[in-house]
Image (cartoon, rainbow, N blue to C red; front, side, top):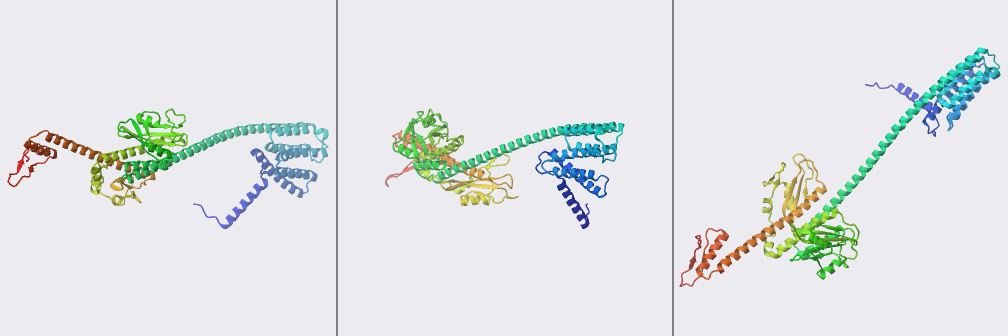
Length: 582
């Protein structure tokens, strides 16, 4: 645990901090220097020259013997410091190193030195040591040779008495000192070079890592952008399918021709296609007849009952026989394209087979003014819509064959919708034991709108209730409960369930119509069989017996009889069938 500082200690530390900051600012190299090594040598030069300047200034106060010598050294220190603070620190370094050595030998020439060995060995080795710290190998080698030569030649210019062995001794010391320091400088330079290369290699690796990371981030950003765009496009496609499905479901009671016309207009508006047409095969499956179109050219083709040969020229003829989608990315060069003068702006075309079960009953044709306008996603969308068109066509056909029965059975009651259904269990099994009704389910049934749990929590898991509607009437509910209690349903998931709900409504109605048609066919077959049996006889009693016998078998009743009215004077005639019915 740290002890709180007293106010006096805080002031002392603050003062020291300010002094350190001032010292750094005074000795710092010029800010324009980019070479880190040169900047460090300049800073060292500034520190040394600043200390020497202070030392020589105090030395002058003590009245030295050689004032001129001290003034010279002080001047060299000040000028070197000023150059060290400027953009040209190399000039200061050379001036300082050369100046101090030269002043020593100048004092010998002027006779100001107290003695040869004292002056040379006291100043020159120290000057060489300082120079080794702030100069490079070449500059230091020149300085060392310069100092050694002046020492060896001192007897020729020195006015200070020199002993013969002093020159050799001083020259040897200076030369040895210079050689050792030069070796240290070379070793240090090589070491710094090796470290610099290692640093550069590390920096290069770091730069490569940084580049790779940036590239990876850019790639991931592009991938995320592409994924987000695909998600948005997918959500838009699901929304378009849901909107068109809802429009079909809402207007299912319209006449088939009107509903198909509404469908092509809706597809053209929502998907931006130049022309959308629906072709249906005729009874002999020889021609694909245009039944609905949105464009002006399509309307002209409708007026003249435009039809194309199944398996003939053109994309529609090809798809009606091949039974799989076909895209012409550039209709001008596509081999199966049929040049239609009613649609001159067409540059690309797609045709989707309309199938009911495995049989092709028509073709959904879409055309665009742009080349290469259609993609695989468009195939998926249009195939989904083609399946709904097949249901609409089948409903229309069934309605025409059994209009009264269709109108009578066209509505599901609430009670049946609530009783029939299946329950998907967490273990993957499917049960007919439905879960108890929830308030959310009841609300969806009552409002006819999708209901979502507002705030899922423990005991109130995330639930989604989507009404199944046909002809504007709620006939059931898709009730989904998440395994995670606090899960939130996404917009894509809700749209997907709504789309499935719309298609389930069509499929249910289609199944009901098929069941109704089958039942009526069985009734017609029974009537025809009974009529044939009755008409095969001319005997009065046999006709009566056959009638009640066949009716008893057909209806599965326990008793049946037939009685003909008579005049008051006659007894009524009653016949009993062979099974005991009468």
